[in-house]
Length: 388
Image (cartoon, rainbow, N blue to C red):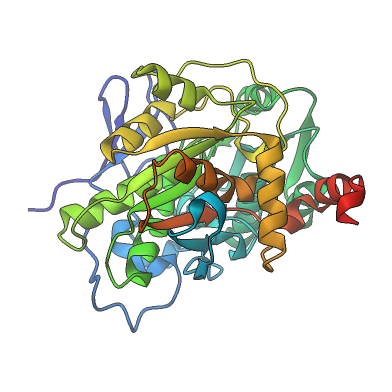
């Protein structure tokens, strides 16, 4: 008999049916989706669409008529010639900035919005630093769900424009990302709080990045996967996806995961370096990687579990290294926003420290399009005569 799907609290282990709308436990803890590893025909997917929904059995939607999709996923995995300290490593770039709204967030949005539709939710509140808000606004529009998207007033204009053009109500909040979340939560007393950081179906959608990487490598796991960490949903999703494939016998091992944070805001890195089991809030400084500037990530402890469970590492990068990666990628025809370049910026340092050894096959996930932050990119490079 198949085990029942449940939403289970990470704090008190309380369980809730997946048939009812819920974004957190009554105790205040965040929820995980239990029994989300249903099998799909890994070696017989050729007739299925080249989207995340080719893995539909593992995504927790009961009725396929509720699926809201815009063809997201199955983004290219391309080779990249390495130099410097990374020379001799086989680097592959997962071009997730090519998803429909210009960021990897679409993987989570398609699954989360599909579940909200299945739950009968007709209006939502979400808070975001930008990309998640733009993505959820798009998918909510496709689903006919009204959306109020709360963002920091400092949001990149390109991301704000996306939210507005999709018909969502844009609410710009003065102050920090944390102030934005607090304002959204206060407003959610009458409208369902569809936070991508809280609702577990968002991370479930991000498992598909792991499924795709494995499938694109003929069901062989790479040695390393490098991903940015802000709220942590991408790295958590990668771990859940590779763990599912390994437990199902589809791949022979789980790749080691490297999580990357900006040096100006690195709560998960601090906890990992100190050997703690719990991520504590930090006072954040400025960083050009606005998408991962999260001082108190809701699922930070799950990120630590993913890093340690995969025998991986956490690291940090400076703004200078991020800008260098933006330029290096750009000179090779790849245009990503600063947050999207974080993974690539970390690889040279990890190789220089011999964490990533010669001969290793490494996948770096590039998360957001440069079109999201053209204003910042123009300001940075036009201000530097050497790049004129």
